[in-house]
Image 1: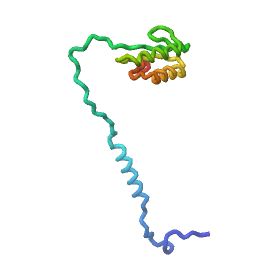
Image 2 (image 1 turned 135 degrees about the vertical axis):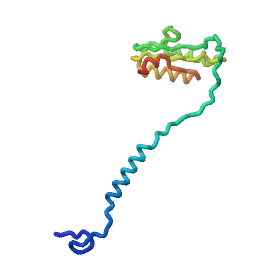
Image 3 (image 1 turned 90 degrees about the vertical axis):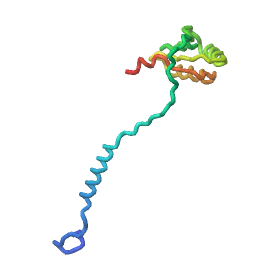
Length: 139
């Protein structure tokens, strides 16, 4: 069983161009271009207000919710249940200037309880909410 490669006689020079070196050079150039292209950084331009040289001494109003590893919920250092918390959140949401809600769960707190508290805050209409204590996990 013989296979004919090329289109001519035995020993005749091959007339087809060998593209393997060309492809190799193109791949090397492609890799070099990919490496040398600078990484695009996405930046958002914001017009921030200038710093206030005379900051006010008024402390912002806030309410703090703590959740411990035993799933106990504390509203401003007082232990409450989920129903009472719902009432407090409703009262806070109806205030003319809504106080900030600071949520501070312990690292071992159950996610299910934290999720329920956040859902209750959203349903009550709380718009200012932040997490306290995340800086401990930065490293």
